[in-house]
Image (tube, rainbow, N blue to C red; front, top):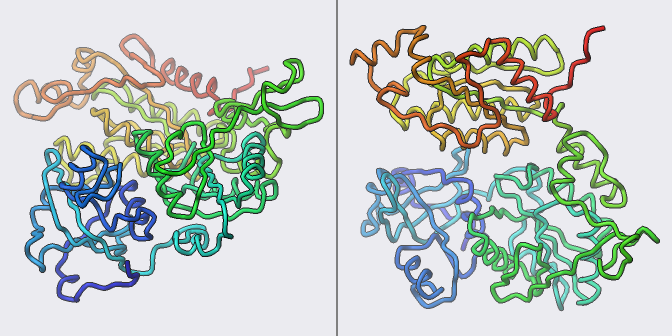
Length: 509
């Protein structure tokens, strides 16, 4: 593929533009750099059918995993693979800058409102931006840097602690291989760390690795673990890896030799990491689990030096400060009249009085007026409203503030999106379901909305003629039928204190 290729002006000017989802953008970059070779673009329908039936592309080339692009049906209907003037689609990054042109060879319906498109790609522009661009080399560039012989690949999708570093050192010595560390930097982040924080944490362990080449790769996780493992192995091979060290979750190598390391433990007799079964039980200390590492960081406790190199520990403490100093989104959901706005205001006042946190209240009605003016109450518009609130809240929390949101948010998918945005920003997310029954909300009816809906003067009223999907993942459930406002606020504060998001208050003398 040739970088800098430009469509004819008349085609480029008239071609529609579309911004793929984060995972598709990661696939796009891997396609453009040749990391997905032999693929030269997103798959067509014939490729997908052939891959699902016989693990080969339509032309017979071995390939096991679907790599697809989905677009709105309305956009696909404007494309015509048979017309050279109407088969170009410009793909842009999240800021709207052109990244590539897709020459559409096929378009097909996927589900209601969504279509698949496939075809070959050509790069537009200079190849992107963002932190650590100097480390984002193409497979061809990396292969040219590697010494001849065996190459041990490690996909560092988590920070490297002492047990992982010991496994890497042992495998490198055993193979007599050069070490290539691939650091995934998909937009979704990994393990609660932003991509740039993961890169810094991996580099902090570099002085404890054998001689190594480190590169960043725009890999995003797929929901299917087997597909994820197969693609990671494919990408590793494209970068020149001959042997791949398993992370414990990836056992499929897609043609590569995969090394599955034995479990290590810390030997308290001399401070070394050895095979677990070679250490007497009284001298054996097992590696910390990820949950234990997260718990120590959340509570502000230092990671023990026997387990984590000090430089890595410092990077993790900076990237994942204690919960009481980290950004937080408190998301209250419930029917109109349930009391969520009143609780949100009381919670905001209480946190402001404490003075430890910067607090922003995103009231549902205010957000409708300031963020979502012009949106109606269809499902799509309601989801857009919640997504906008979730995005603003995540940006507040990214900078370690507390965002309190209280929209109705009737649909589970939109609430899940708000949670994902907060977590991707490195913040916490607490979902509070104000589960006051409908009949109680109707009796209150401070705004007269239920009365108008029952009289047929208002349609799309949640709980009356529009559904409310009750959360199954709420962190706290409150029913204000017999609960005073102060009691409800204290219940939320108690939860935040118990889970470490708020400093406990000392009892008055």
